[in-house]
Image (cartoon, rainbow, N blue to C red; front, side):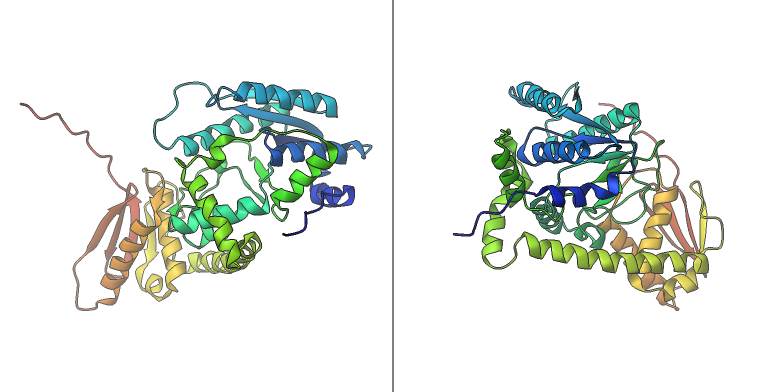
Length: 368
């Protein structure tokens, strides 16, 4: 039987939060589960030992999906008050979708946290994602056919998902549009190298109770089903630490590819890198680029001028393969033209154009 893992020491907590000390205000995302409750406790201890430091606001999102959620939110409120931390409860109102419930809840949660952060004058939201969460995220993305960007896992600091600047492959193999929203807010995940067991040990040592969300083990949800497989993988050596190591190595490769993309863009771009387009590229130089670099440049051009949101990586790869095949076939002089993501991609001679596609006309109902 493995030895029990130790709680987080005060010195460790100081190191985990050190980079946040200069910030004027921080929002702590606290659901009431073990991980976020430990975040609340450790952040309160860390702030209490400083004469000057950021204002802390704990925010609990009540998704109103379970009868117990309101009670759990009030329990967090009582603990925050005991610890001397300001607290707010925000609620996800309105109808809930029948399909994609967890994804919709995630979007709503980040939107509510962002609103609370802006109201509090905070540009950083601190979450309690752990080493175990990182492993599950990579496994989940791998199962969904993610690109390299997704397999890099969660970063310690990243733009809030609803405020992501865009470009590049998303966690589910999608290419994000270049889009910004006002007031950049970042997510900070100080516990990515800390196991869930250590956070639970921290709460047990302090005799602080926490809630357990039954949806974490609900087989209706993909992540919950994959979570049951994790112990089997760990028994074969593919534990959370190995997944985290993979994420770090992929992130290193990602940084190299991104640098190559940035260097390649001015060499192939013939016009301005415009959000409205058209974007004109040198088709000959585009064909000479390494495949991954060219693929990402094409995806970003489509993302900038298109109007249909995210593009699935598989669809982008299919278009890219067809485009490269046409460009290398010197005997085929016909014009190449395809539509993807609300953008039209045209190769004529040595000029590659990416421009906004005309809006689709609504279909008229057929007469009986």
